Structures are given as C-alpha cells and as structure tokens.
Image (tube, rainbow, N blue to C red):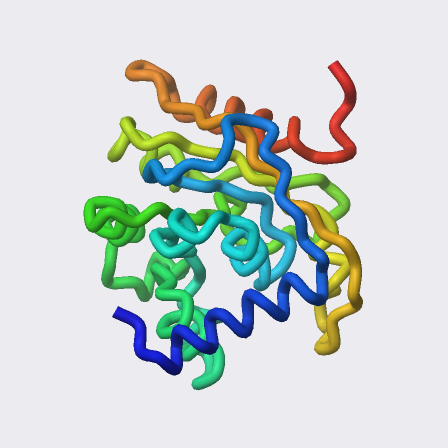
Length: 212
C-alpha cells in the first residue's frame, strides 16, 4: 500500500505529464475496461509508462504496474523512489549474466496478484529511424504463461519529441496514446508467428501506418 507521500508524488507526476503533453487517449479497439490486461507499447522514452498510466481511467490505472529495467530505475535515489516506490514498477535485471530472478516469473507473480502490466517488448528505447525494434521473446513467454489475459497494443506518439534523448527540459507538445484491440495467443501458435502478429497489431496503430 502506498504512503501518503508516494501517492501525492504519483498524482503530481501524472498531472505534470498531462500538462506538458496535453496527452489524450484514443481507444481504437474495445473501450477501457477494468479487466486485467497486459498493455504492450512502443518504447521511445523513459517516460512512456507515465503517459500510459496518465490516460488510463482511475480503476485500471490503480491496478497497473509498469515493467522496467532495474539498471536504469535503481541507478539513483530519485529514480529508485519514482520507479519502485511511486509507480510500483516490476524491475527487471536485463543482464542475463548478473540477474538472479527470472523476469517471466516476476511478471507472472504480479499478474497472479491481480495487477495489469505495462510492458515494452522491444526491450530498450528505440533511437533508430525504424518505427519499432524487433520484439524480444519475453512477450511470447509471458503470453504462454498466462494465455487467458488479453494483450492490448498501445501506440505512444510524440513523446520522443517531448523528451529527446539527452535533454533535461521537456518540450511541450501534444501526445496521443492509442489503444488497440486485445488479442490472445493461440494454443499452437509458434513464437515467430506470435511476435510477428503482435508487432503488426502495434504498428497498425501508428499514425504513419498505411491505410488499408
């Protein structure tokens, strides 16, 4: 349970995010729901999960935990407070050699406790010209482990321009967060086919996606 201080900090950070970005949600799939979900999004900034939380309605927002790299969010006291204490992030060690916890087990533990998750299957921020990086296999293994939970693609637009890499002061700019239709892994679906399908569902939400 959050303390009064962390609850206030969370509210202030979300309010600041809304103020700086005028962020708006678009629900291109099903309308918002209180059902448990795995939201998977493109990754261009360390503030991505904040925008997703900022546009979720109150009840699903309070039950959602971002999944993030411990190498970044435990690097300083301020980051640790924001990532671990304020947003209750599931912090994953991305170094296969040094980590002692299984990332899939960490995420399924959070799901089994009743939380929804916000995940970034590219595994790292995309600083290339490509719309997204190839998905890591984690999303497949998570979907296989809990196949009844819907996976919702989420496209975050413009945040990389609000917080360019290496910049400290945000640039006010309108952002959108677009939610697609929930999908599920098929019982016999292979990893390659599943990742291609989830990538395509995410890319279809991009403003640059070609019309059908």
